[in-house]
Image (cartoon, one colour):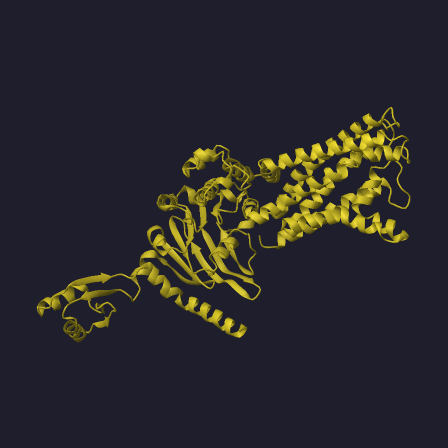
Length: 310
Length: 272
């Protein structure tokens, strides 16, 4: 379990993480979302004790990371897959990590096999593709069989097979009862992988909700209707209390009544319907709605700075 | 929640000694698993022995013994060593930190061993230990090679003479001190070129500056620098006006001690 209590980090005048309080629970995959510069990576660095918080605390299993003894047996993490020494072999890299935390050496071939790197264990890391480096970073995170795992953008550089592999791995780790925190800017990926979402913007918590509820709760759910007698149908729907908005391509977005009611109404009046499609907002849309305020502020601020500078 | 989530280390956990061994093993594996480290050491050793042989041959074939007697006979052993061993080993030591900072590997290191004093101590022990072994091997190697070439010509010195074993041992220690200075400056500066410049500045530059100072200042300030102190500890007949060989050895130890202390304060206070 990861707990953040009023976690705050300022770099000079910039507040990267702003009074963040939340709990990441074990047994599920928690997606960590936010626009670029929202503070995701900084938050993870604070959890790992790499950066020192301005105020507040990040606890892993009830303790600050820097107080953990042999921490890699408690927390496995991958922040930056390219942060490796290219001259070392994959095996030697993992060996150094293993001995640093008294992890048995027989664990090295296990994680190499698990990440599909068994055949390149003796190769130097500089020959690896980004995808292979991601797998190596994940192998290093899994070495200590930690109950808490944290990955920053782990699907970067992976091909389609790799993405599917990591999705299964994350779910498997969570099913084991581990705490799994994964940051991503790929909403679609998180919709498929994460059970729970934490969304931050400008370092502040925007949402801490089950993945389902973020898509389900949005007011943007509507029904797309196309009909050759669209204006007639629109009048009937409006009379029923529905809200109708014309779309650019000639369709209508209808809210307030469900698809069945629209179909019944059209049938009762003998109006042909060419398309009738209930639309759930995508996770991406829900996310954009949530982060719109912080993103707007950010671009407005940049514009103001640009003007002041010119 | 399963057994995984509930797993916790034993109440006592591994002992301090076990964790110290972890930090040492970590740095040792990292040092030996980069082949260029070994190649650099090997090339440095060959260059040191080679340059020492060239210097010794030049002295031996001179028509008359150089002035200074045994002082020169011993010092000649270290002319090649002072550059061809000291520079590559110091640069190698600088890289122990700067290569991790430039690749980002330092974050893996600090995540694995969050007590940063332990990381610094582990690196100092491994790098300093390797430099000490290399330094003593090269110091004695250069000494025996030089004296073998000088003996029978202008009369070399032997290990049996008082003061000689200590001087040669101290010569090896100088390499360890230079390496630890480079290691610490690497941690403070973090960028390779800047850290190398700072290290060479401390090891050679400050001494060279003192050479151009007016008379009372030259020795008065110069004796606090590494080159002046190093020439004293390997000299059989120390120069008056400088510190004694024993005090000079303290000066040589004080530089890496101060740099490592500053490095420890820097790495524990800064974000990684």
